Structures are given as structure tokens and as C-alpha cells.
Amino acid sequence: MVSEKPRSGKDARGGGGSDIDRFALTEVVPSPRDFIFVDAERCTGCGNCVAICPMDLWRMRGGRAELAEGYRENCMECGSCYIACEAGAVDFTYPPGGTGVSYRYA
Amino acid sequence: MRKFDLVVVGAGPGGSSAALAAAEAGMDVLLLERSRFPGEKNASGFALSTKAWRDFPFIADLDLPSMRYNRFCVAHILSPPPEMEERFSISSGPSRRMGYPEARDFFTVGMLRREFDQWLADKARTAGATLMLESLVTGLRRESGRVAGVVLEGGEEFAAPVVVGADGVLSATARLSGLREKWRPDQVISACAVDFEAPRERMDDVIHEAGFQAYFGPGIGGNYLVAYADGVHLGGPGVTNSLVSRLNRSHVKPARELLDTIAAPPTRRLLRALEARPREWQAHLLPWMDRMPTNIYTGGLMLVGDAAGLPEPLYAEGVWQAMYSGRLAAQVAMECLEEGDLSAASLARYLERLEESPVGKEFVGGAELRRLFEILGDPRLSRELTEMAVDLTVNLFMSAQEPKAECVARALPVLAENLPALMEVARIYLPMILQVEGERLRGHLAVLKGLAAALGGGAVGSGDAEA
Ligand SMILES: Cc1cc2nc3c(=O)[nH]c(=O)nc-3n(C[C@H](O)[C@H](O)[C@H](O)COP(=O)(O)OP(=O)(O)OC[C@H]3O[C@@H](n4cnc5c(N)ncnc54)[C@H](O)[C@@H]3O)c2cc1C
Ligand code: SF4
Ligand code: SF4
Image (cartoon, rainbow over all chains, first blue to last red; front, side, top):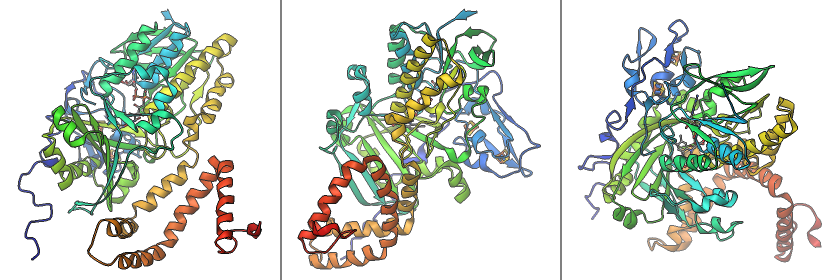
């Protein structure tokens, strides 16, 4: 008789990636100034920034990308949005020394 | 304004190695770091490879609480999403034929960057370098057209005849000096990682020394697990896709793909067995070049490590490369200071020596290897090769389901069908091997030819088999 045990996937105990709360698992000393700058005139609406941001801090609105207002509280300074934007609509510098994301277990 | 012999920007492995070498040679060195402690900004599923033990005698003293030796590598081939169940795995200890003792003993040692980067920066400080934290470099000083020091946010200036830019993948020194505005999207990987903490006894029982595990498969880009004394990192996406090719293909978020791998049944079982709890979420860019960049110096400035784009072209390992290039840049700075010439022409020896060094050698065939990865990442080929491997290994040695001849018979047509792809692999691989190891291998080819003749199989290659 073929086993009735489900082979995979439907594990009842949950867990795994779905319960990883990215926001609860990062520590940020918010920067006192802006360090990502968006030039709406240059934005082509390609969506690269929205797709790449590991913290989901970008949204499309009216065909243009928008960075979340409170991004300084959650941004990981990875610079992915800056590199992924081929239209040159995103500029990026680091926040001031001593502020920004803080990894303790990296 | 304070003056130094050398200013190093960034106290990662590249910067601290440069500062250490320069300070040991008696130079007056300033090491500037934007974070509150070295390692605070460096997300990395960090495993240090044996090359560091081979090339840096002081690494033998390394003894950090988070260290776990990796003596067993595992590659898990998973079935395609959404199932993502274990399908085939390859695992091994280090080859007994490696060229130096440490490489025969272990592959890597997993450790936290917070500990490693501080340890290395402390070494530089003990050797006499001045370390300044919370100091963001936002400008370069110039004298007669050459870089001659740095400017901090807030305006403080430090003068030095030569600067080492060790400020990582989003290097401000590269941008400010005009060496590179920014990487193209296809030159970097956007990586994420989750740190899990796990009781040490669980780690010892379940992981032991299987400290590096990677997850591949059709549509799965190579996420990885690195083990520490009391936890693991699950990171990704792996190196099979660069940022922009991934975006163009599907707009699948790299973060999503990692979370999917963490949610995959085999990973979940492992995490449960480890009683692992997520502790930190991390994200970082990583340069991933298939050829060694050459625009890495100008008058008064040398770029090292990630700032120079030096991570190795296949796995994007970058810490040993940063250390090696950092030390080399310090040596070149010293020589050029003694000669009193810090022009671009004089610093050009940095690039020349780097290209000839083991760091440069790892780039030989980089583009070809990358192509190999793409071929093997093809879902159909990857499925066929997996089935072929199962027939030729597990079915022959471990399964009693069918007569052995059946398994071999089944594997052969698959082999024949995939010959074009396998030839492509060989076509990429062989010239590269010959380029690096030509002389040594020509000897082996002669042996093979002799063997073919002895077996009466006729000539291999040209007609010299009758010899
Ligand atoms: C997820 C992930 C996993 C990885 N896993 C491995 C691995 O297992 N093994 C391995 O060998 N490599 C690994 N790498 C690659 C490795 O992390 C890098 O190649 C390595 O850190 C490069 O060292 P570096 O000194 O050049 O730069 P970094 O380590 O990035 O150090 C740069 C330093 O400069 C500082 N800085 C930046 N800008 C400024 C400024 N303007 N002013 C002052 N300070 C500044 C930063 O805070 C930082 O401390 C991984 C990378 C990632 C992203
Ligand atoms: S730097 Fe990284 S985390 Fe911050 S907004 Fe850009 S992509 Fe998102
Ligand atoms: S990547 Fe640049 S051009 Fe594309 S949507 Fe984002 S900001 Fe606009």
C-alpha cells in the first residue's frame, strides 16, 4: 500500500520563512538626516527598486516609485535600490557615522 | 589638520589588514570607520577559507567564541518549488590531495563578523594604527591633482600622501576619486541572510562539522547555510543569478526566495532539530565580477577588497581577497613613499602584482565558470543530470529495486541526450584548466594516450599513439 503520509509541503507546524518578522529582527539607530534621494522626474516606473528592496520600503504610485516616509527607521543601507535603478533616479549615501543599521550577529 | 603617512577608509578585513601591515612596518596610519564598532555594518554569512591560514601567519592565533570548523560540505539538490523536497545530495570532507596542510584538514571556519572584524582592527591598533570610529568619509583632499587625504562629514580633514579605499561595495572613495560612479546592476548580488541562534549541544549533535551547506535545484538559486558555535546563518540568493538578471527574469524578490528556502521542508526540519530561533535579518550588496577590475588605483589612492570588486567570480568569497589586497596596497604604499612618488604611474605596480597574485589567478576563466553555472542552472539539464546521478550512484550501490543493469541502461541514454550540454561544459572547462595548469596536465594527457594505445582503442587525438 502506498503511504498516506504527505511527502512534504503541508507540514502543520508552521514555522520556516513565513514567521520571520524582518522588521522585528533588525536594529536601526535612525539617521538624523536623509540619505536616499529620489528624483521623480527621472523615474521611468520600471519597478526594480520595489522588487529588490529587502525591507519592502518602495511602492509604485501613479506610475512612479515612492520611498516610504519612515525609511530611516528600517532601511538596511544595502544600496540595492540605488544600484538597481538604471534610470539614475535614486541617489544613495550612507547615514552619519554611528547611526543606521546595526548588526550584532552578522 | 593632522597628517599621517597613510589614511585607510573602512575597518573591514581589507582596511584592517592594510592598516596592520603598514603599522607593523612603522608607518603612521589612520584607520577610519563609520560604524560604532568594526563589523557592525558587515552582513556576511561568514566562513573564512583555509587560504587565510596559508597566507597570514597571525590567523593561526584566531580563537573567537563563535568559531565552528567546517570539515564537511553538503550540496542539497531540491525538487522545484513549490515542493522543494530533498532530491539528491553531494557531500564530502576536504580532498586529501590539496596543496597545503590546512586545506587537507578543513574547508572553512564559520564565525561572526562582529567578532572577526573587531579582532583584526584590534590587531591593527595594537600594532600602532589610530582607529577612529563613527567617522564617515564624505570627501577626498587633493594636492596637485592627486588624492592627498580625506574629509569627514562635519568637515574635519586628515592629510596623507596616500589613501587606501577599503570602504566596501558602495565605496565613496571610488566615487569621489572618479574611478567608478557606481556598479552596473549585473556586477553585484543583492544578498539577504537570517541569523538563527541554536543551543550549542544541538549544534554539536545535529550539525557537528557539516558547517557549509548549499541548496540548489531547478529554479532555486543556491541559498546556503553557514554554521557557527551557537547558531546558523541561512543566506541567499546564491551566486547563480546577478541582481539584474533576476529582476528581468521574474521580479522575484531575492528576500522572498530566501524566505521560501527557509520555509522548504528540509530546512524547516533542520531548524526544528536545532531548536533554532531567528535572531537577526540582514541584507548587503556584494560585487560579483567575472574579470578582475583594473580601474582600482589613481594618483594617491588604491582600492582594496569589495571597493575594488575583488570577490572571487564563482562563489563571491571576498574576505581573504580583501585581506590580501589590503596588505599588498600597504606594501606598495610603503615602497612608493620611500621612492617619493605616489603618482598613478608609480602605484600601477599595485594592479600588476594583484593580477599575478593568487587573488588575480582566481579570476582566470571567471567568465567561463560563470557560463558553466548558467548551464548547470538550466532546469531541464539540472533535472536530467540529477536523475542520471541517481541511477549511477544510489541505484547501483544502495537500492535493490531493480537489476543493476537496468539502472546503467537507463543512465546511458540520458548521458547521450545531454552530450551537447556536457560537451559545452567540457569546452568551457578544458581550455581554462590548460591555461592555468597546462604543463602539469600535458603529462597526464600523455599517460591517457598511452593507456588508450595499450587497450587497443586506437589513437586519442593525433596519430602519435603508436609511441
Ligand atoms: C551575505 C553575504 C555573505 C558573504 N559570505 C562570505 C563568506 O562566507 N566568506 C567570505 O570570504 N566572504 C563572504 N562575503 C563577502 C565579504 O563579506 C566581503 O567580500 C568582505 O566583507 C569585503 O571586505 P572589505 O574590507 O573590502 O569591505 P567591508 O567588509 O564591506 O568593509 C568596509 C568597511 O568600510 C566602512 N565604510 C564604508 N564606507 C565608509 C565611509 N565612507 N567612511 C568610513 N567608513 C566606511 C564600512 O562600515 C565597513 O566596515 C559575503 C558577503 C555577503 C553580502
Ligand atoms: S538601501 Fe536597501 S533597504 Fe534601504 S531602501 Fe534601498 S533597497 Fe531598501
Ligand atoms: S528603479 Fe528607478 S526608475 Fe525604476 S521605478 Fe525605481 S526609482 Fe523609478
